[in-house]
Image 1 (cartoon, rainbow, N blue to C red):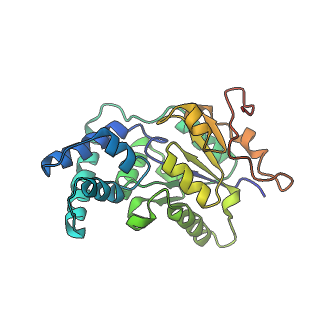
Image 2 (image 1 turned 90 degrees about the vertical axis):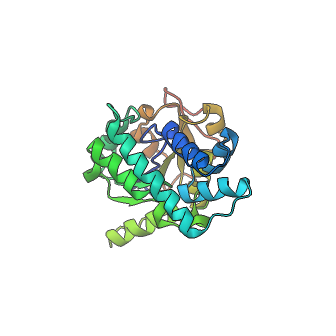
Image 3 (image 1 turned 60 degrees about the vertical axis):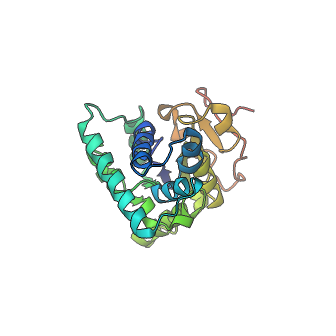
Length: 253
């Protein structure tokens, strides 16, 4: 077994856009005469698709949303997201993204983005960041049903399936992948798919991510794939779920 693919989450790993998403969802709620709640947002939206997020928020306030209404809300939010990004003087990418992509390319690993975000949002950011050509595959929130949103494993399993379809001789297995996640839902989704997880403490404190992911760093720029590849060996069992590493690249208890 070897490390052969890296599967990056998008919101909270590639781009620091959670405040923007929160504002856009709040605007939709207010326009529909519903009350925004930070607790509801954190529980219903972090790490999940916009479809699952909006449906859950509406349900929590006793509002039934039809599929047609949900589609219109999703399109309204996606259009505003792209407009907002294009108005920003600087794209709020996390520091270290270029280095992580360089490490992936140098090691000749497959790179996929596996996210609950809309495809148009992901493609816009990747294009603005100038990294589109380095991403072999995108699995977005548009590609899975509402019930398949993280923490369900559907998006990760679909990413592995599609990478294998793109490369007929790849025969990629979940244990040969590395998921990079920042949310509890995302970590659970990857682990349920059988994919080892490196957590980044962008959205939650280090110690909370440490309890869930196989490894953890405070920041994206601390990722060292050479260090991690040592644990992808046929002579080693799958890494313990409580393992982590710090800036010194050593396991922490």
